[in-house]
Image 1: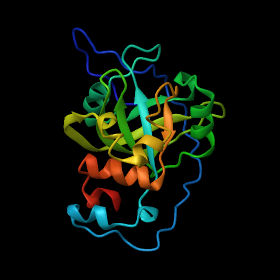
Image 2: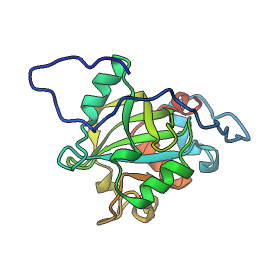
Image 3: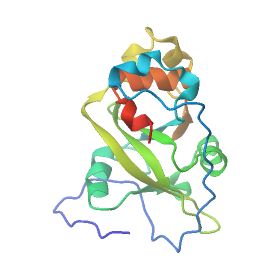
Image 4: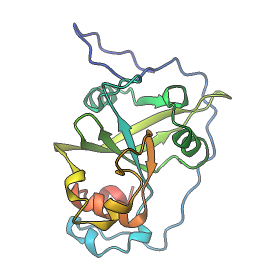
Length: 198
């Protein structure tokens, strides 16, 4: 892991630990029936079933596992994409998702719970294991110019209202999205289709 840049008052971030020699889990490639169109404004016409898997990764600088997405984006520029893992996730459902369902190549919505807003879009770059813990290594695809509060769109878009990620009182760190929910999120965050093609 790359050395952290020393600053006078470093912001809070998720606890990390030294990574062992990684034992990569096999990468499962989800087959796609067709390549997505390349125009950014074509996303509304895309069949949601062909979109890549999107996870909502919630961080909170006020929680026990402090996490500031802005800090991550700066650290990742310096080559440090490690952002948490099983050792700092306490929710059983989120741990199960990470151990059994999250795959390299899946997309991640960077959600800052204490704002609350979407901060950017990442891709799961690696999920190294040491026989017990799984680490999350991310690649930044897009940092939004302004944080996007998706909660205010729940009444307008049933897919957001009915999804698991933004239900009031639904505790956790990692949340899967349905294809329809992912499509709405990509549209509201103005994610270019070129990023979804990987």
